[in-house]
Image (cartoon, rainbow, N blue to C red):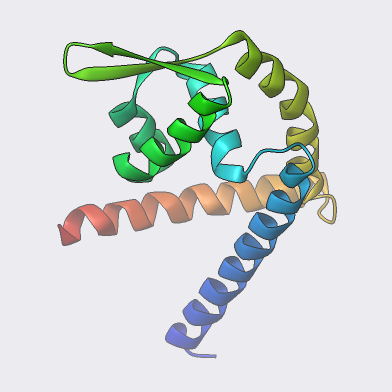
Length: 146
C-alpha cells in the first residue's frame, strides 16, 4: 500500500470514529437536556472560572460568535452568569449550573471512557501515545505552513 493511500485510510478511519463518538455523545447528553456544546461550555467554565468569552472560545476551538450563542442559551436557563468588566465579559457558573454539571459530568465521563472498552489497557496507552505523536507532528506542520 502506498504512503498516500495509507494516510487517506487512516484519516477516513479516524474521522469515522470521531463522528460516531460525537453522535453517540450527543444522544447520551440529550437524555440530560444538554447538547454537547452546552456541556463543553459548562465544563470549561467550571474548570477556568471566571473566564472571558475570548478565552473560552480558544479552549473550545470555536469562534467567539459560536460561544456567544451557546452562552446566551445557558444564561437564559440560569446555568451561567456573564459579568461585564471594562470591555470583557467574564463567565461563571451559577449554583444551578454547577449542580447540573456535577450531576451530569460523572455519567458523561463514564460514557466517554466506555467508548474505548474494546481495547486492552496496553492498546489504550499505545493509542494515546500515537495520537500525542500525531498531534505534535501535525502541529509542527501547521506552524511551518503559516
